[in-house]
Amino acid sequence: MTAALSAFFRMLPRVRMGPASRVALGLCSLMIACVLIVDFVVGVMPDQRALLRQLRERISEQVAMQVVSAVGSGDPRAVHRLLPQILDKDPELVSLGIRRSDGQLAAQAGPHASHWGPSSAGRSDLDHVAVVLNLNDQRWGELELSFKPHMSQSAWSWLMEPRVFLVLILGVGGFVLFTLYLRRVFHYLDPSAVIPDRVRAAFDGFAEGVMVVDAAGRIILANASLRRWVEREGTSLHGQRIQNIPWLRGSLPQDAREYPWMRAMALNAPQKGEHLEFPQESGGSIRTVVNCSPIQEGGSRVRGCIVTFDDVSELERINTQLRSAMEDVARSREQIEKQNEDLRVLAMRDGLTGVLNRRAFFEQIEPMFAAARAGNQPLCCIMSDIDHFKSINDRFGHATGDRVLKVVARALSGGVREPDLLGRYGGEEFCIALPGTGLDEACMVAERLRIEIENRAGKGVRSTPGLVVTSSFGVSTLDPSVADPLDLIDRADKALYHSKESGRNRVTRAAPAT
Image (cartoon, rainbow, N blue to C red; front, side):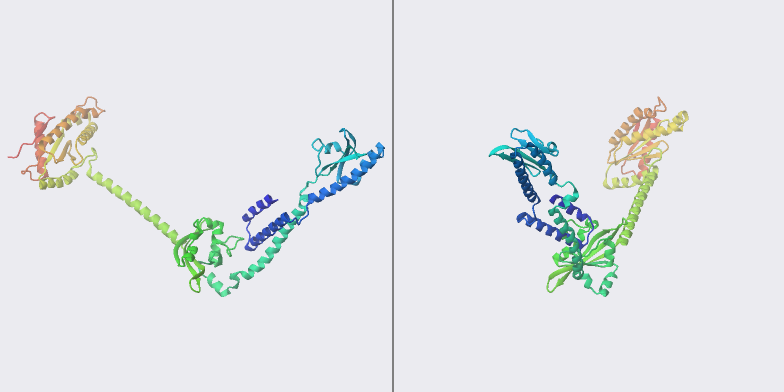
């Protein structure tokens, strides 16, 4: 029974109940528990089993006396006639049997074999009673009586048992009476019931949500806006703690002491700028800013807290749209910057070979030349020209010529350093600026590039097997007689022309100025 009541009480919180019904349920539970404890200690309710045992003991004694009298008469038929008569008179009996001391059944009435089995032989219980029969002060046998089962066979019989019936009456009747009484009491104890209508109307006129809580955090008063946001059908905020409302529990901190109104009362200081969401049945939510101010009595004693909830849902929506627009602008700016960088690269790079074009090369060599001249640092220039390039175009076509330009540019790019400049000077000519490099070292770089082109450039044009590609190089260096970058390039170009005149595929350094 206790387990059944516990399961019943566990299911009750799932049912929506008002404060009066909850208190009534608690009082009924306490009352039933007290009755059961008193019955367990004192035994105020009758014991059904004890009464039934006493009754069946008396029946068994009376039947035994009649059977002993019939056995003592010496007439065997008297015993056989007596047993059916006894069975018919007493509705509690279902079978009778007389068993001699040798174990043989001398007489029976009713389906005794089915009710008195081997498990019942030799012992007595509430449904099976064995009485010893003595004749002339000697054990003659036993009288076996089978009664109706004492266990209830139906729900109605179980409900009619005294203990169950009493608990049922106390539970149902007490719950109804307590609920009716407490509803009347709560009406007089409800602080909102004594608030003047004009005050309540003024609170309900606020667009913000307003509530007043006591020192324990229970809601004493809530205006119409807050009730509209929070209450559901069949629920009431009055007397509840806001953390006990299931659909708001997820929006609050885990620790109740961290609630803004509880913190305001604990610190006896206003709390402002807290945020709280109220989920709505439609699927959205109302976002609010919470401001709390403690209510003091006398000196510094805190009796409660007044809490306001400012609806900032529309402001949050606008801010969200603004943040989204700003993110879109930022993404657009990044795309524009990337496109500008791409355009800048396209403007600086040769479209075919990928190296600097002539304009970009001159823009970057001028500050390099000025820095080398100001710091008295070495600076060399290498001019390179593909040998017999016009013949390659004429024999194999301009497409092959373009491939040759690409593989030569790739070979030159792989042979220079990060600070070096490599640009397409025009047609099949390439120009390289080597800052911090002396003339001898620059000639070694040019020789290495010449060998690389001779060995690999022709093989790199796979569409034309057996193609031989070579380049001629001219090298110049910065000395006091060089006036500007164009003069430095012109000297390297003259050295290149000398390489062409000397048989091509070779490196020539510019002659020193006279």
